[in-house]
Length: 119
Image (cartoon, rainbow, N blue to C red; front, side, top):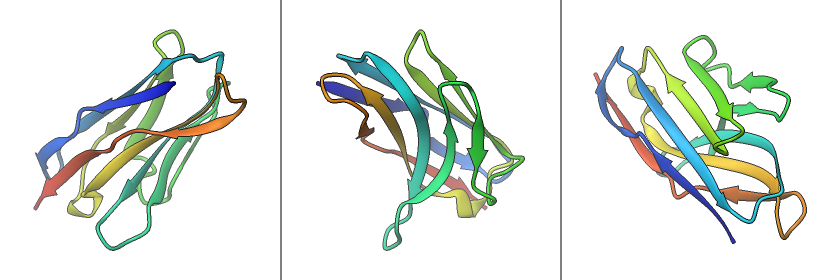
């Protein structure tokens, strides 16, 4: 069993900052990629950022220069530092982790955390 627990969402004014966290627990042998996605009601879930085991990162164009993804391997946790937030960043944010536990190289999703940016 693998669980992902997210935290850090909330309500913030435009221009403000939030930091999301996602901690993985359970039977985990290795973690490959850790990523963040977001979804607005009525729209498809979209990619936000990803970080590999080696620390390489990639971002959606819409968040480049404003968001920073990082990870703590020892804590099996991924973070998303979101700065200069805009109303269009409002969404439910989900973490996604590809890891090997009892199942080799499987994707797991967090429960989602709401981020609301007011104008």
